[in-house]
Image (cartoon, rainbow, N blue to C red; front, side):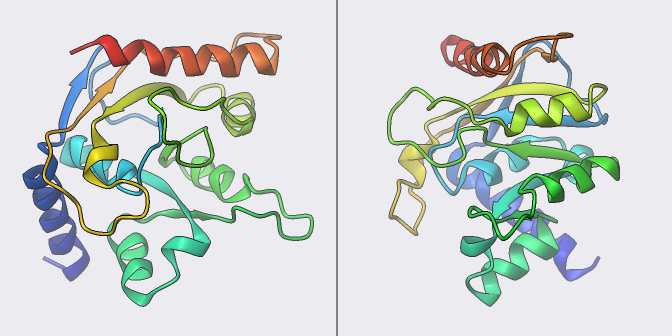
Length: 205
């Protein structure tokens, strides 16, 4: 077993030990097909929790989106996100004329699944902030990729903003029924509908 694989198994075990990392599936099974998982965002621990909640055969084909400036700021964070999670790095600030969605489009073109947070930044409130347009543009370019909403519960208490040491608290990820972009659907309507699909999962236990 190679070091990244062994480290990945250890991190999955650690995430489950700290949080329980329970995955609840409503409306779709945990199936190995290309998907975009989109969820609320309140902690740097969010995508680790989703990754740990996925069955092992889905982890290898599912890549989280990671902010390049934060997750490459140290050799350790860069190694973990690159070698263990196979993260897709994105720049939070536009560089020249580069399309910020280009790395995501490339990953989807190669058949990867993605974990994204359409709010674009972490929030402190219970309700997600309005979704940015990235999810809409990806849905438009990849109509055959399933869009699966997810609600992450309690993770903001595990790794609050500004903290670096996780606190053991039971967490869960609830996956909902896939949605899709309807023909001719307005961007604002779609993004509001996608946000509502995430929020609707909050009341499911």
